[in-house]
Image (cartoon, rainbow, N blue to C red):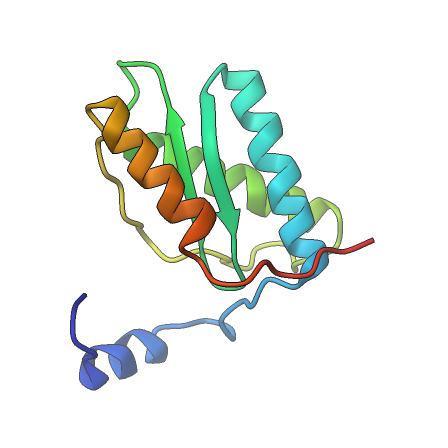
Length: 130
């Protein structure tokens, strides 16, 4: 864990064009559905995911020629587009941070550990929309 950096946080907050997004139940449901749809369409193996109020954890296998960063950006774009189409966020609003954390998982044990963290290490389940 990296220690908190108040100066960096203030700097990043000053760059925001609108208030940070806190995903509500409807937005989390839309995000869940979009992740599943994109992974099916792209034929990515979706091992585990957890949609939280401020971030998402995803464990997936992608084509070798595709970088994890490209997959992450593809998912962010589609999730934002779907939420805008559904009226859950204003068109043109940024929902996600500029980047995100990506990690290569080389062994079955790595995948298992990542899945356990994503599924069991995120705290209590969040309520879902009807």
